[in-house]
Length: 238
Image (tube, rainbow, N blue to C red; front, side):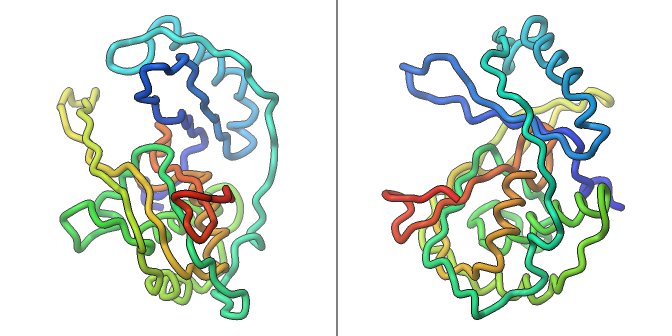
């Protein structure tokens, strides 16, 4: 299996650091552990994170942090039956669906082989990225998914973007093994998509929860869904 498609066992997903000058310094985060081996190492992972707060710090400035108000673990299981195997027209559509990125999204050439730019972000781009992540997760930790991916992709291609507020995100990085600098290029923001088949919603929901694209282990590629006629003003979280 292609290394880029394998869902990492641990995803650390912090929320985006607020720009508000009145920010109180608290940053919520989620640790998503996939598979029994990762779940068994939960305490070790949190201990390592706490140690990083003391000795390494947060961001390029190395700002110290500590872990507070940790919630008890919540263990669940995603069954393959929760992901519709093919689109069902009788289930109807969601008139307006907002996809709001919780972290930078790096789709890369893997998901956009024929396009040089990062914008616009089409619904099919997000859907196919979600499918890739979920396919890899099930193949690695359970059984390969059995679904009509061609029919699902065709349904996703019909979904149009009504309004978008995506912007390009750039950040420098260093490949420590070869000591070479590079630039990460992704997107941030949100988009409203119209007439989304209900059959595609579970794929989008779980894709956002497990994260998609590149650098998932660092928390990239996560999103939340909001339902509503005008999701920018009165949205219902899904």
